Amino acid sequence: MGSTVSTSVIKRLPRYYRFLQELMNNGITRISSRELSEKMGFTASQIRQDLNCFGGFGQQGYGYNVSELHDEIGKILGVDKGYKTILIGAGNLGRAIATHINFDARGCKLIGIFDINPQLLGVKVGNIEIMHTDSLARFCKDNSPVVAILCIPKASAQQIADNLVKFGIKAFWNFSHCDLKPTYNDIIVENVHLGDSLMTMVYGVNNLLPNKE
Amino acid sequence: MGSTVSTSVIKRLPRYYRFLQELMNNGITRISSRELSEKMGFTASQIRQDLNCFGGFGQQGYGYNVSELHDEIGKILGVDKGYKTILIGAGNLGRAIATHINFDARGCKLIGIFDINPQLLGVKVGNIEIMHTDSLARFCKDNSPVVAILCIPKASAQQIADNLVKFGIKAFWNFSHCDLKPTYNDIIVENVHLGDSLMTMVYGVNNLLPNKE
DNA sequence: TAGATTGTTAATCGATTAACAATC
DNA sequence: TAGATTGTTAATCGATTAACAATC
Image (cartoon, rainbow over all chains, first blue to last red; front, side, top):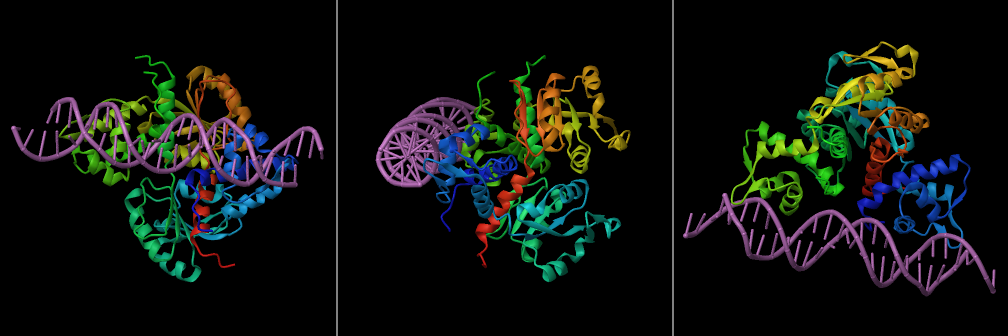
């Protein structure tokens, strides 16, 4: 239960989950850590090490049952939990996230979208009507969402996050251009810095290409 | 030049860059590794260690000059390079990326957007007209883009990437739901797995909340 | 049974932190 | 000069890899 698994391992779990899904789709029912390692680019040792953080899912002399392992990892990740989720900020990025992400397959259920811009009120994104940020408190009281996705400018992000914690939000998926510091303990924060990711890539290019200057 | 800096360090550079920008905006001209460590949540040791991978930017007894350090890191990252960039896939996510990201401030210059859907031809995203994927070869010949952003379904991602490499693309910012394996060497790939990020967060929630079952 | 492959312990490697001499 | 803080080396910590006994 509570025994903490390192975040390095956790971050690899979704990747295992994806590859196992792929294998299932290809009708492969059984795989050894060595075969999986070749497909995924991890070492077989690491795969066995990782999986054994959660239990012995394999069988000596046989390997792993693909769909069984897939389901186990899904359970560990919580893909079937359907945590009630709201999205704040229905700009370009917010609307894209709302429509592009398969929340249901990843343990979330999108139940509300909010924006501060009155012009967006009632506009539909997927099958959800955008509501005004003013109605957040009421909505949270009535529906008890657990996860909040922040697609708002960094200036307002911290303050809105603080409020949301008061409204009972337990986790943030944060696309705002800042590092959230939740005021309270036991709040999960996953910061997504797309700009940082792009700059990392640019560093790579910059150090790959011969400088022409 | 070529002396390799670990990716752990590289991935922290954009974060330094952001915080230093923030400090500049607040009119702070000078900072010690200890002060910076408190703001950023790294240890002072790590900050000095990181920066010294690239040179001695500080001064004993004084600390670091904020704007100088900011500019040095910017130069290391290549934020002023303006690498010509194209975006493939003008769906919800593609259009959001095109409009939401400040490419110019991150070493990229978005010069073309492509989609396979004929209905999108000529539609403007920002100030760029969507072109058909069929014209990619021609466009690359004429304009020599270096970076490609992939916002296309995973089924077609690998094949399009292979083609783009033939057209001279040197780096991918990949939002497709797959891990790109570029066929050639010396190609930079930055995979962004938004779904994985969400699942990591869900794992956190799942292991934080008391299971009610 | 013999062969294969796991689960798990031990060895290695790399990254982070601590310490301190150099120096502004 | 004395105080502060870097640059850098050494110590620690954690994560990855290798090895192998257990076992299917």
